Amino acid sequence: MGFEVLKLKLMPSSFRRRVLLRALVIVCAFSVVSVLRNLAGAYEGETISNTQPCKVDECAVNFAFLGPFLFSGNGLLFSNRFLKPVWNYLESDKCKDNIYLTTQVVRELTGMNLLSNDSKALCIGRRSVSAVLAMNRQGISDVSVAYMPPVFAFKHRKFTSELHYEDASFGFVFSMDLESVAVPASLVYEIERILKPGGTGAMLVGTTSGSDSNELVRSVSPVSSLLKNSSVVHVASLGKQVLVVFKRDGEDSFRLDQTHHDFPADCSSVLNNRPYIGLLEPLLDEKRSDFERRIHYLPEFIDLSSRKRLVYIDIGAVDHVKARSNWFFPSYPIDRKAFNSYFVHHNTSILTSYVKSPGVTFIYHPGLAATKTTIANTGDHEEPFVEDDSFDFLAWFKETASFADFVVLKMNTSDTELKFLSELIKTGAICSVDELFLHCTGYSDCTGIIKSLRNSGVFVHQWWED
Image (tube, rainbow, N blue to C red; front, side, top):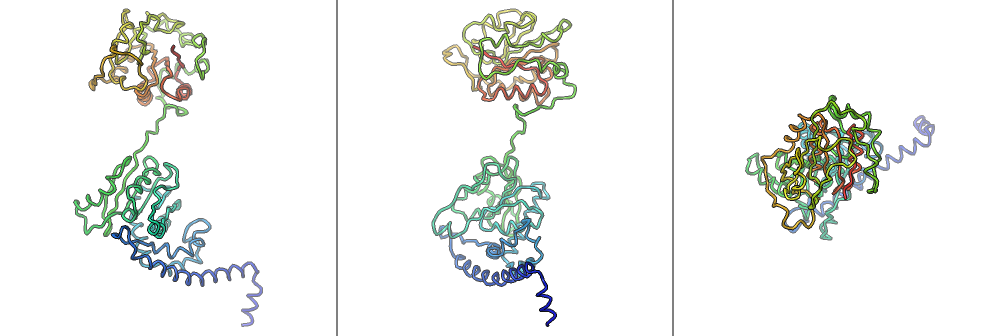
């Protein structure tokens, strides 16, 4: 006995303090957890609108006192070997059931490649703690909790409909509490809002006695009917509950103003014009009276004498009602008569003056009528919009450009035309365009598009119109 006392005295004081502190924590834990469990039992009969029982997360009760110690350090529950036996003892049957249920969900979604260990996840609801514990055990460590205490929700008759997270914050969101919240629609809307494009949402809903398809469909409806920007991708029966999994609609990762575009290795226009990109005129924030004289056209740097078929395509032209005789670039090194010119528009009346000359062709494109940049005060001159699904403008452009030796393209930046420009880039058809002019109308960051195209090797100008 004296030897044991001597050993304790010889221990460093800091170590003795840690031992005593942990012993005190364990003693207090047993007392506090018992009290908390008794308090939790007081709410088991409380209902939402007197119809549904309040669900209390047993894991949250166990976690209330030991949680800060168990989740200290790396944030993983079982990284602390000293407290693991204590937690295993305190873990109730309900807590174990909730953990097992979430574990089933995680394993199923992981197997379907709808969830990965590096996903940033959020668990919503009063049973969130058990979900976090299950995810941690399955190797998902970046998990947050949005926990809503039942007393706040029911006694004050108030539901916090907005989660305090930014839009598109999480790759995975999980909730078991759709049927126990005051406003189910708000919960679904918020999950969609905070999900990243392409992210996965999972909810446990309803009760089912089996895997009958009709019963599963009825259980899915409370979720699927509320989704605005997502689609249900998986439904499964897990015991007495139904798992509904949906994916947030993905955004096209392609951006016109992204830093750089990847073109085919044999992209002829980029290969030929890249040496001259640095000679292009600087971009302007607003129109200058001498802007046209500052432009350096591509024929100033390359010899076109051997190129027989020159093509000029003007999409949307300029929406002028008045006749225009000087529609071509005033200082262009090559006469406009050398080009086969195509004016693409939805309004034949506006372009009547453009197509009187030989070598000029009008291409009717009804889709341009839907653009945001429209002509003002045209009165009765504008023809009504006529849908023509048979006209594939991209196919026409590719065919026309394929027979050309030199292509000049001028276009506006309305919605329809920018979509077409995107298709040119995605399909590689931009490689047939030797020189591009963008008339910056209707788009806030036209200069961003031009910078991106120049960085990628496209010989593009910023064009101003009166």
